[in-house]
Amino acid sequence: MLRAKEAAEEMGFRVLHIYVDGMWVQKPGCNKKEDFQPLLAEVEKRTDLMIALEGVYKWVAFLPSRRNKKVAVPNRYFGVFQNGEIKTRGIETRRHDTPAFIRDVQTEILELLAKAPNRAALKDYLPEIQEVIHKKQNDLRSGLVPPEKLVVRQTVGKNREDYRAPVPAFSALQDLERAGKSLRLGQTVRLIYTRGSPRARAWDAVTDFDARTVNLPRYQRLLSRAVQSVLEPIVGSECESWLARACQLSYWTQKGM
Image 1 (cartoon, one colour):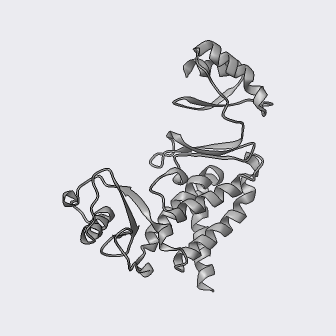
Image 2 (cartoon, rainbow, N blue to C red):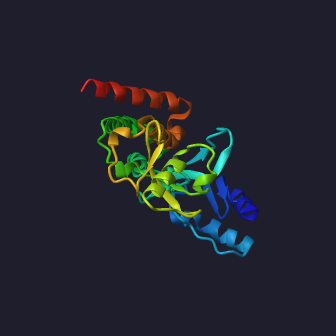
Image 3 (cartoon, rainbow, N blue to C red):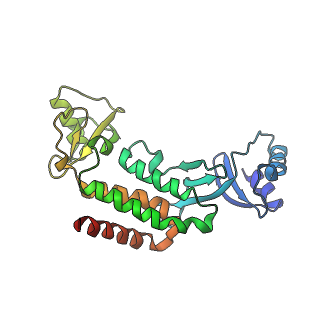
Protein backbone atom coordinates (compact mmCIF):
# COMPACT_ATOMS: atom_id res chain seq x y z
CA MET A 1 0.00 0.00 0.00
CA LEU A 2 2.86 2.38 0.72
CA ARG A 3 4.34 1.73 -2.71
CA ALA A 4 0.95 2.30 -4.31
CA LYS A 5 0.52 5.54 -2.34
CA GLU A 6 3.97 6.76 -3.38
CA ALA A 7 3.23 5.97 -7.03
CA ALA A 8 -0.04 7.89 -6.92
CA GLU A 9 1.49 10.94 -5.28
CA GLU A 10 4.46 11.00 -7.65
CA MET A 11 2.01 10.99 -10.57
CA GLY A 12 0.14 13.99 -9.18
CA PHE A 13 -2.77 12.21 -7.53
CA ARG A 14 -4.14 13.15 -4.14
CA VAL A 15 -4.63 10.05 -1.97
CA LEU A 16 -7.95 10.47 -0.19
CA HIS A 17 -8.18 7.20 1.67
CA ILE A 18 -6.49 3.81 2.07
CA TYR A 19 -8.06 0.70 3.55
CA VAL A 20 -6.63 -2.85 3.56
CA ASP A 21 -6.58 -3.48 -0.19
CA GLY A 22 -8.14 -0.32 -1.58
CA MET A 23 -7.01 3.19 -2.36
CA TRP A 24 -9.08 6.23 -3.30
CA VAL A 25 -7.35 8.94 -5.33
CA GLN A 26 -8.27 12.22 -6.93
CA LYS A 27 -6.69 14.33 -9.64
CA PRO A 28 -8.11 17.30 -11.57
CA GLY A 29 -9.09 16.25 -15.07
CA CYS A 30 -9.25 12.54 -14.25
CA ASN A 31 -12.89 11.51 -14.53
CA LYS A 32 -12.83 8.56 -16.91
CA LYS A 33 -11.56 5.02 -16.42
CA GLU A 34 -8.81 5.44 -18.99
CA ASP A 35 -7.45 8.42 -17.05
CA PHE A 36 -6.40 6.01 -14.30
CA GLN A 37 -4.77 3.34 -16.44
CA PRO A 38 -1.23 4.81 -16.20
CA LEU A 39 -1.52 4.74 -12.39
CA LEU A 40 -2.74 1.13 -12.41
CA ALA A 41 0.19 0.12 -14.59
CA GLU A 42 2.66 1.91 -12.34
CA VAL A 43 1.25 0.32 -9.17
CA GLU A 44 1.43 -3.14 -10.74
CA LYS A 45 5.01 -2.45 -11.79
CA ARG A 46 6.07 -1.39 -8.29
CA THR A 47 4.20 -4.06 -6.34
CA ASP A 48 4.06 -7.06 -8.72
CA LEU A 49 0.38 -7.34 -7.77
CA MET A 50 -2.68 -7.25 -9.97
CA ILE A 51 -4.79 -4.16 -9.40
CA ALA A 52 -8.20 -3.21 -10.77
CA LEU A 53 -10.20 -0.02 -10.96
CA GLU A 54 -13.51 -0.54 -9.17
CA GLY A 55 -15.02 2.61 -10.56
CA VAL A 56 -14.93 6.39 -10.81
CA TYR A 57 -17.00 8.20 -8.21
CA LYS A 58 -19.13 11.27 -8.77
CA TRP A 59 -18.58 11.87 -5.07
CA VAL A 60 -17.66 9.89 -1.96
CA ALA A 61 -17.84 10.60 1.78
CA PHE A 62 -15.57 9.03 4.43
CA LEU A 63 -17.09 9.05 7.91
CA PRO A 64 -15.42 9.75 11.26
CA SER A 65 -15.71 7.68 14.42
CA ARG A 66 -18.93 8.20 16.37
CA ARG A 67 -16.91 8.49 19.60
CA ASN A 68 -14.31 10.91 18.29
CA LYS A 69 -15.18 13.05 15.28
CA LYS A 70 -11.50 13.85 14.75
CA VAL A 71 -10.60 10.19 14.18
CA ALA A 72 -11.30 8.65 10.78
CA VAL A 73 -12.81 5.17 10.55
CA PRO A 74 -11.34 3.38 7.54
CA ASN A 75 -14.31 1.14 6.77
CA ARG A 76 -17.20 3.63 7.04
CA TYR A 77 -17.97 5.42 3.81
CA PHE A 78 -20.56 5.87 1.08
CA GLY A 79 -20.52 7.28 -2.41
CA VAL A 80 -21.94 7.11 -5.90
CA PHE A 81 -20.18 5.91 -9.02
CA GLN A 82 -20.62 7.75 -12.30
CA ASN A 83 -23.08 5.10 -13.46
CA GLY A 84 -25.33 5.90 -10.48
CA GLU A 85 -24.47 2.80 -8.44
CA ILE A 86 -24.40 3.45 -4.70
CA LYS A 87 -21.48 2.07 -2.69
CA THR A 88 -21.68 1.79 1.10
CA ARG A 89 -19.54 0.31 3.86
CA GLY A 90 -20.03 0.30 7.62
CA ILE A 91 -23.28 2.27 7.73
CA GLU A 92 -26.76 1.09 8.67
CA THR A 93 -27.68 -0.25 5.22
CA ARG A 94 -24.84 -2.77 5.57
CA ARG A 95 -25.36 -3.80 9.20
CA HIS A 96 -27.19 -7.08 9.80
CA ASP A 97 -28.80 -5.74 12.99
CA THR A 98 -30.49 -2.78 11.30
CA PRO A 99 -34.32 -2.98 11.22
CA ALA A 100 -35.74 -3.01 7.67
CA PHE A 101 -37.58 0.27 8.35
CA ILE A 102 -34.36 2.08 9.25
CA ARG A 103 -32.48 0.50 6.33
CA ASP A 104 -35.21 1.56 3.90
CA VAL A 105 -35.16 5.17 5.11
CA GLN A 106 -31.39 5.44 4.77
CA THR A 107 -31.52 3.83 1.34
CA GLU A 108 -34.20 6.30 0.21
CA ILE A 109 -32.03 9.22 1.34
CA LEU A 110 -28.98 7.78 -0.43
CA GLU A 111 -31.00 7.37 -3.62
CA LEU A 112 -31.91 11.05 -3.49
CA LEU A 113 -28.28 12.04 -2.91
CA ALA A 114 -27.23 9.78 -5.79
CA LYS A 115 -28.93 12.20 -8.16
CA ALA A 116 -26.39 14.90 -7.30
CA PRO A 117 -23.85 15.27 -10.14
CA ASN A 118 -21.12 16.38 -7.75
CA ARG A 119 -20.33 17.22 -4.15
CA ALA A 120 -21.41 20.84 -4.48
CA ALA A 121 -24.94 19.81 -5.48
CA LEU A 122 -25.60 17.53 -2.51
CA LYS A 123 -27.21 20.27 -0.39
CA ASP A 124 -29.77 20.87 -3.14
CA TYR A 125 -31.51 17.65 -2.08
CA LEU A 126 -31.88 18.56 1.60
CA PRO A 127 -35.49 19.82 1.21
CA GLU A 128 -36.54 16.49 -0.34
CA ILE A 129 -34.69 14.60 2.38
CA GLN A 130 -36.49 16.67 5.01
CA GLU A 131 -39.81 15.59 3.49
CA VAL A 132 -38.71 11.94 3.71
CA ILE A 133 -37.82 12.38 7.38
CA HIS A 134 -41.18 14.05 8.08
CA LYS A 135 -43.11 11.20 6.50
CA LYS A 136 -41.12 8.40 8.11
CA GLN A 137 -41.23 10.00 11.56
CA ASN A 138 -44.99 10.41 11.26
CA ASP A 139 -45.40 6.84 10.02
CA LEU A 140 -43.47 5.60 13.06
CA ARG A 141 -45.40 7.69 15.57
CA SER A 142 -48.76 6.85 13.99
CA GLY A 143 -48.17 3.10 14.10
CA LEU A 144 -48.14 2.81 10.31
CA VAL A 145 -44.86 0.88 10.21
CA PRO A 146 -45.54 -2.89 10.11
CA PRO A 147 -44.00 -4.64 13.16
CA GLU A 148 -41.97 -6.96 10.92
CA LYS A 149 -40.17 -3.85 9.60
CA LEU A 150 -38.99 -3.10 13.17
CA VAL A 151 -37.40 -6.48 13.83
CA VAL A 152 -33.79 -6.29 15.06
CA ARG A 153 -31.34 -9.16 14.67
CA GLN A 154 -28.83 -9.74 17.46
CA THR A 155 -26.24 -12.45 17.86
CA VAL A 156 -26.64 -14.52 21.02
CA GLY A 157 -23.45 -13.96 23.00
CA LYS A 158 -24.53 -15.49 26.32
CA ASN A 159 -26.74 -18.23 27.65
CA ARG A 160 -29.94 -16.82 29.15
CA GLU A 161 -28.86 -17.62 32.72
CA ASP A 162 -25.60 -15.71 32.24
CA TYR A 163 -27.25 -12.32 31.75
CA ARG A 164 -26.93 -10.07 34.80
CA ALA A 165 -29.37 -7.42 33.60
CA PRO A 166 -32.72 -7.62 31.75
CA VAL A 167 -31.33 -6.34 28.44
CA PRO A 168 -33.49 -6.78 25.29
CA ALA A 169 -31.70 -9.98 24.23
CA PHE A 170 -32.43 -11.52 27.64
CA SER A 171 -36.13 -10.70 27.37
CA ALA A 172 -36.28 -12.17 23.88
CA LEU A 173 -34.57 -15.39 24.99
CA GLN A 174 -37.12 -15.68 27.81
CA ASP A 175 -39.91 -15.41 25.25
CA LEU A 176 -38.35 -18.17 23.18
CA GLU A 177 -37.91 -20.39 26.22
CA ARG A 178 -41.58 -19.99 27.16
CA ALA A 179 -42.49 -20.97 23.60
CA GLY A 180 -40.37 -24.11 23.88
CA LYS A 181 -37.63 -22.79 21.65
CA SER A 182 -33.95 -22.19 22.33
CA LEU A 183 -30.92 -20.73 20.60
CA ARG A 184 -27.26 -21.64 20.85
CA LEU A 185 -24.40 -19.19 21.24
CA GLY A 186 -23.63 -17.54 17.93
CA GLN A 187 -27.14 -17.91 16.57
CA THR A 188 -29.37 -14.93 15.81
CA VAL A 189 -32.35 -13.83 17.88
CA ARG A 190 -34.96 -11.66 16.21
CA LEU A 191 -36.64 -9.14 18.50
CA ILE A 192 -38.65 -5.94 18.70
CA TYR A 193 -37.85 -3.28 21.29
CA THR A 194 -40.79 -2.64 23.61
CA ARG A 195 -41.65 -0.15 26.35
CA GLY A 196 -41.29 -0.96 30.01
CA SER A 197 -40.85 -4.59 30.97
CA PRO A 198 -40.06 -6.74 29.10
CA ARG A 199 -37.68 -4.56 27.12
CA ALA A 200 -38.12 -6.67 24.00
CA ARG A 201 -40.24 -9.45 22.55
CA ALA A 202 -38.92 -12.34 20.48
CA TRP A 203 -40.40 -12.10 16.99
CA ASP A 204 -40.26 -15.88 16.52
CA ALA A 205 -42.13 -16.60 19.76
CA VAL A 206 -44.88 -13.96 19.91
CA THR A 207 -48.09 -14.61 18.02
CA ASP A 208 -50.14 -11.75 19.46
CA PHE A 209 -47.74 -8.83 19.29
CA ASP A 210 -49.34 -5.54 20.33
CA ALA A 211 -47.97 -2.73 18.15
CA ARG A 212 -48.89 -0.23 20.88
CA THR A 213 -46.05 -1.59 23.03
CA VAL A 214 -43.32 -0.63 20.54
CA ASN A 215 -40.55 1.46 22.13
CA LEU A 216 -40.94 4.44 19.80
CA PRO A 217 -38.20 6.61 21.38
CA ARG A 218 -35.64 3.85 20.82
CA TYR A 219 -36.58 3.46 17.15
CA GLN A 220 -36.59 7.23 16.74
CA ARG A 221 -33.01 7.29 18.02
CA LEU A 222 -32.05 4.55 15.57
CA LEU A 223 -33.67 6.53 12.76
CA SER A 224 -31.89 9.74 13.76
CA ARG A 225 -28.55 7.94 13.87
CA ALA A 226 -29.06 6.46 10.39
CA VAL A 227 -30.02 9.85 8.96
CA GLN A 228 -27.10 11.54 10.69
CA SER A 229 -24.66 9.00 9.22
CA VAL A 230 -25.38 10.16 5.67
CA LEU A 231 -26.09 13.84 6.33
CA GLU A 232 -23.18 14.72 8.61
CA PRO A 233 -20.65 14.97 5.72
CA ILE A 234 -23.09 17.31 3.94
CA VAL A 235 -24.48 19.48 6.73
CA GLY A 236 -21.34 19.34 8.86
CA SER A 237 -21.32 20.49 12.48
CA GLU A 238 -24.93 21.67 12.15
CA CYS A 239 -26.18 18.15 11.46
CA GLU A 240 -27.62 17.50 14.91
CA SER A 241 -29.46 20.82 15.08
CA TRP A 242 -30.70 20.42 11.47
CA LEU A 243 -31.99 16.95 12.28
CA ALA A 244 -33.60 18.18 15.51
CA ARG A 245 -35.46 20.88 13.58
CA ALA A 246 -36.56 18.37 10.97
CA CYS A 247 -37.87 15.96 13.62
CA GLN A 248 -39.57 18.76 15.56
CA LEU A 249 -41.29 19.98 12.41
CA SER A 250 -42.40 16.41 11.79
CA TYR A 251 -43.89 16.32 15.30
CA TRP A 252 -45.87 19.52 14.84
CA THR A 253 -47.01 18.44 11.37
CA GLN A 254 -48.47 15.27 12.84
CA LYS A 255 -49.98 17.09 15.82
CA GLY A 256 -51.85 19.41 13.49
CA MET A 257 -53.33 16.56 11.44
